[in-house]
Structure formats: structure tokens, C-alpha cells
Amino acid sequence: LLLGSVGAPRGALLSCDAGGRLHAAAVKGAAAASLRDGDLGAALRGGTRCDVTALAQVQELLAVRDKRLPSGLRSLFAGAGLTLALPLVVRGRLVGLLALGPRLNGAPLTPHERSALETLGRYAGILLHQQELMQNLRAAVEENVRLCDTLANTYFDTVQAFSAAIDAKDVYTRGHSVRVARYSAALALRLGL
Figure 1 (spheres, rainbow, N blue to C red):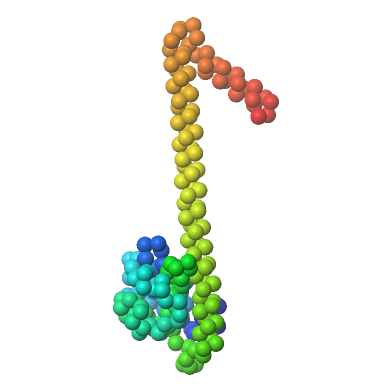
Figure 2 (cartoon, rainbow, N blue to C red):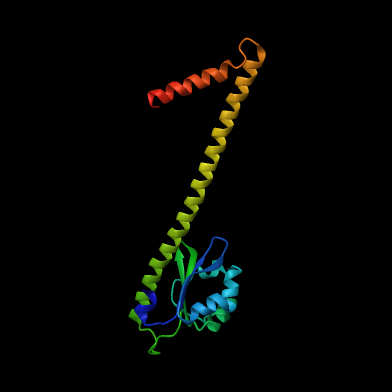
């Protein structure tokens, strides 16, 4: 949608993690091969680190040769045939970059097209940010489930230890706790609990 809105046949949407490493989220056109196989692809697979603090201050479409882009990104983008870059900033943090190749007709973007692309880029940035938040939430939920399982196992082991200690005190009551547990489980099953 973003590329088609300005007639650019190639481009890339890169996400930036909290550590400042760029990762290819989506690619199209000749840039796709460069992102997979070329210098940019190798750099992204290695988790290219970008100057997050500097790019988080920029919220406008930049030419790839613009000095506000880190020099490593400038050369990598140029090598992939990408000519424009838009930092995607959410709440003062760089969440990604949108990089575009030249338009099919070769014409520069009009001010209206630049504005529209920057607006669409803000929405893309919000989507990248939401995706990151969802991944963090999933990880937190998985950790909570793991902790609950550990807590349940610890509780069960503690009850078993108490039961064994009580049963060990007296030969007459040995096994009593296990029998009570079996009867309780059978009653609960019979009652449909």
C-alpha cells in the first residue's frame, strides 16, 4: 500500500528493536533480493545497529544521502537501490524505517505525496510498535504460566512432604494421608467436581 501510493516498485519496511537493531519486516521489488542476499541483508541478519537517538528526532522523509541517516545505513540503502527513508517514530522512540526506491516515472514526490507518505508511515510505525507490544505481552504471559506451573508443583511437593512427615511419625497412621487423598479424589470424581 505504501509503495503503491507513490508508484515505487521497490522498498522495505524495517523494524527497530529496543536494542536499536534493524530487522526486515517486509520487502518488495529489487530491494527484496538485496535485503535477503546483499550487504543490507547480511547486515540485517546480523542485527544492524542504528543510531536510535538521532533518528528518533527525525519525523520526515529523507533522501538516502541525507547526513542525518547513519553512514552505514546510507551506503547499505544506496547499494539496495533505495533512495528515500522515513524514520518511524512512536512516543519518541524509533520503531522502524520505511525505505523506498525511485518511482516508476522517475518524478520526485510532490509535497502532498510526501505528506501522505509521512502520514501512512506514522500508521506503519504504530503497527510495528503494537506488534512489539504484543510480542512482549505473549512472552510475559508464557513466563507467568511457567511460574504458575512451578508454584503448583512446589505446593504439591510441599503437601507431599508434610504428608510423608506425618505418616513417618507413627506406624499405625502410615499411608493414612495417601488413602484420604484417594478417597477425596474418588468422591470428587463421583460428584463431578
